[in-house]
Image (cartoon, rainbow, N blue to C red):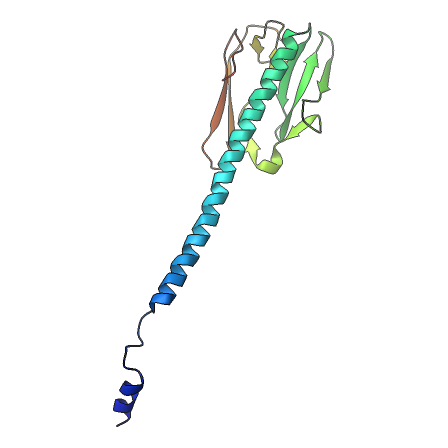
Length: 164
């Protein structure tokens, strides 16, 4: 007798989920996915922005060298990089345009520049792998990375100093 009364109170099965519960779960999953994908996109955008900024800084060093009788270049310190000039006997650091400090800090962004150490430019804009701008002109490839993100690279062409 008790079973029949139970069936009358709950004519539908109570096993499973209601449509409202399913929709709520799908909405929560889509919101969480959107947040995660949004953050991944920002990391890639930051890496691209840092790569473009480094290219601009390399071009700045090259143009300073072409406008003076000094060697100008960029040196990577492991956590950042800075602009330097060399007059044949002494080297000095200089602040890059639109930067608050002499050293551009990359550690906060998790960005690294691979095996790149330094590049300098002579009065013709030719790149060299040392601060003195001596020896033969060398092309360099600078690999810019952030964690497990795809790598960006900057190529500096031998002799011409074309930066791409």
